Amino acid sequence: MKYERIKYEDLNDKQKEKYNYQKISAVLADYGFITIPLSDDWNGADFLAVHKDGDTLKIQLKGRMSFAKKYLSKDLHICFRDADTWYLYPHDDLLEMVNIKTSLDWEQKGLYTFPSLSKANREILKKWIISS
Image (tube, rainbow, N blue to C red):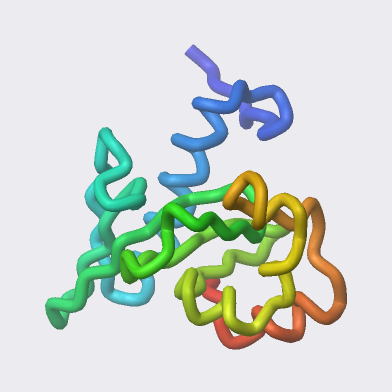
């Protein structure tokens, strides 16, 4: 049987989530982490990343730069991919650096996502780039 490379755009949402988990797991392995998937968003996390030295990160995998009130004070990291660049940032720390707390989405819905990254956001996110 011959397999062909898939097109990410052809995957459904659940398949994209699983695909992204596999991709970021490979990247994190290059930094000494193993990943453990969670089935129920434990404390907001989709998976745990356990470093060879013992540190454990709780990670929520997203499709873009995102914030949510339900993630506040949970020591949670957000991970997303933009083109070929992966970002892994501490939710609460980055929230303090972006100006969204007066937005309607944040005030009324308790969440805020950025459909695309502005030049300013790319600059802020520079220190949280993770890639293989």
